[in-house]
Image (cartoon, rainbow, N blue to C red; front, side):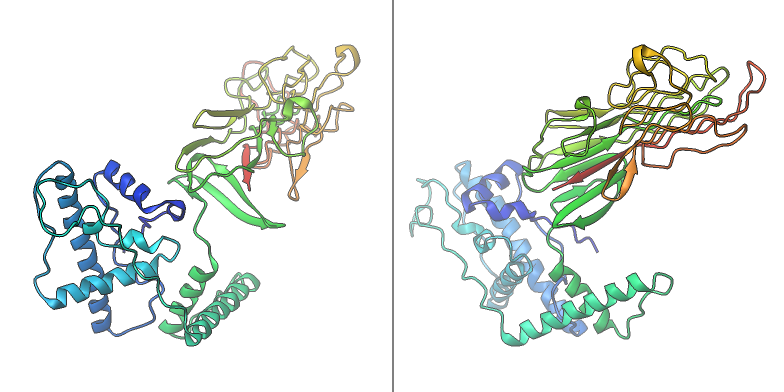
Length: 439
């Protein structure tokens, strides 16, 4: 069953004229498929009756909206006439079902299209249909005490099952009946607010709440849309880490953030507002992969992590790939953190150079500070309990592969073979980047 919600939560802020104006722009009035959400378990006959009432309301609204568009173009038409009292009763009951199913939408949105405000037409005679003030559907009656008790019971079942599944990750809870499973689903809907961010297909993320702030950790890019304006949005984004090169560690991905978790001024990004009904694009930088002797080039640098859309463009640069052994090749621009074995400064992170540009060592730079010696990797920054943007360790041991962890922006550790020139050699890859949004 397709339960896609045709009434986003931002409509709660709309007036009825704004709602009608939006539908005129679309050329149709939103219709929702029959939805059992919130309906207690009933017999098959009851369910079919509810569906008939729901569909009757949708059908009549669609016909009247089509007539409404033609009246606006000056055609003298009459509204839909019910074929019998049963159809009129089904329409009113279906109207009430919509009002109860979407309590956050003003009830006026479900009133008959036949009383929508439109200019007076000289073709229409009879009652002043077009100049009257639109009536408002009576709000649903207060929830009865018995219904409150049932809602509390549904919430309790949801909390119990959720807690059980957290504590018993191997064997999840087995419902004892269909009614218990439906009670769990009703509790889920009662306790879960409408989503503020709607993610597109393909994007992968995890959601958490810390100190009343919701965090979305995006690990695979894609698109998302916000249902309402978000004025306090924060982001923490790290590019992909660079791969190692021989005994030299790769540089970590660069950092861009508008939080207080940063080290260098170049890492401090702009404050942003995510606008309602706008689509935003996310790209997660890949970790640098192995190349050929004498270094891991041809994709060895980390990929950029980006957030863009609606005039917004923020980029956390990928980390530099490492040089080879102690040659300290110049690699000074275009990367987040410096790679080991180079004079890389790092545009959004740490440097692998010491005083007056003297090379420090073979470890890669990190976002948390400059390198201190030839082995210790550049430090990262801990955000929500996870440390991101650590440089690759220098000179681990020959033929040792320590890849950067996925979605950390860490650089690969230096420990590749010093094999024959001109041939491929095993070296560690950098970790992919990450974007963390919160509000």
